[in-house]
Image (tube, rainbow, N blue to C red; front, top):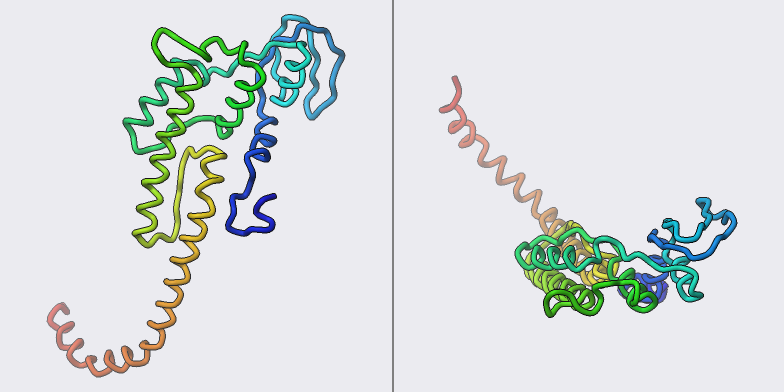
Length: 219
């Protein structure tokens, strides 16, 4: 992996993320009959009967003209338009499949004719444009968040609904930032510990005065 030689590099390359995404399940309609395939789950195909298969198998069958691929529901123009609007109106990341970028890219590359709204809908917006716009809006949010992290000391961070690609990109920066904050905090703790005896002596000298103040609140 990319991170093996460069500890602060992105953990995965784009090709590796795509490879991981190929295990996601997707629906196909085969045009052939095939006996049982013994994978982790048992698969068999009947002509024109929809079935769920891993994305890598769907792409392989599609390349051979043995099936059509049904685009997932979240890739419809209506759904993508709703997500884009919500992304623009909210500071939070909207829920999308973890590999939405890789899945959409694979389908655009190998099954464009199976995606009805890939080019045009009732407006000047296509499926591809919507996904690119969603990516842009989400990256803008990430950039804004990273600017805040770079200005404020942070010891932990929770980012909900990031996709694989987005998490892969921000991981190196966040890791370095948190490591820096931790080192700064550790050095300050060491400096503070050097002054503990002095503070204890001061506290001892202030003992009688504290007692006299405390006695005012005793019942």
